Amino acid sequence: MDWNGHVSYWNKSAEDLIKISRENCLGKSIWPLFSVDTRKKFARFFRLIQKRKTNHIHKQEYFSDFEKWFDINIYVSEVGFSVFFTDVTKRKLAEEEIIQSNERFIIISNATTDII
Image (cartoon, rainbow, N blue to C red; front, top):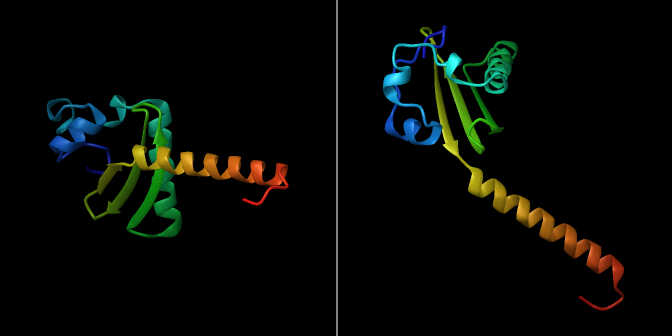
């Protein structure tokens, strides 16, 4: 992607995950295809890159546009940036189930005098 958000490469996995076809984004700015919320998240990512003066950041975020959690890696180059994303929704849901299960166990163990 160049600095104006014009897409130069969009693979089949991106089409499947994001539900935006190659034809709808190659050579065009991707930002109009996303909600304000998603655009704000990416603006925050880019400000973070500038603030840290780094050429890479990694973030894990929930994107309501897609109802999915993504692992996001952004790499900066002289001509723009590359964004790599992986759907981690199943893992995040499993982690949340473990947290809730542990919380229930703590409540039960605090409420009983039985040996657990």
